[in-house]
Length: 246
Ligand code: COA
Image (cartoon, rainbow, N blue to C red; front, side, top):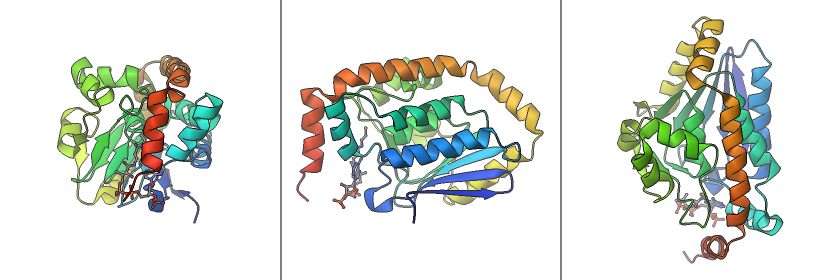
């Protein structure tokens, strides 16, 4: 089975992360597949809504830490990651997410690009970037303070305090908590897809403002990331994870 499953059902495209044995940690190939699915949906008038989903064992454990080690050697955020982040920021179609279990790092920051997020009661959002020697990415340094205010965004993005489903709802990232996450997310996607397509696109564009402002922030974060990924703190954190005893 591929690590990313893409299914079209009428006007809805589901992009499901499918690497449960690694808690859906994202590899370069997975970013490429998700970016292509999002970019391609933009050119298909029949597709009206995208649904991003994970697995019951977890939404996404963030970037693959083995790949982080590789990136530390090259000193750059990988091109597939930047492609995926640009695709998210520039996506014109509504994005719905279905979150069960852990959403870590990019697993949380990708949700900030979504229009509707459905979470299971066990969902846990966290961004331990700074403790790992890294920095917030995906435009989150711009979007999170707008979404939840500076102090709450600081607790999440800098101090690494996780949000459970209820706190994520209170912070405005999650808007529905449901036991049947996939069913509820699909219902939401169908509701959006049934609305007049042009009205949805135009309203969404007006509400979100400039995608290029977000792209510019993604690029600025990626530039700053380069210095941090090779830092002693980051190397120590990656090595601690990869060599942990269980
Ligand atoms: N990168 C690479 N591998 C990862 C991973 C990641 N981000 N997250 C989990 N995995 C792997 C584990 O190494 C393990 O692999 P193994 O079975 O070959 O040893 C497998 O996924 C299962 O993870 P495990 O830690 O045993 O599951 P758990 O239920 O005890 O904990 C997490 C799940 C997600 C809480 C934990 O794996 C974790 O903290 N992952 C790292 C998250 C992170 O810091 N991401 C980067 C954010 S910037």
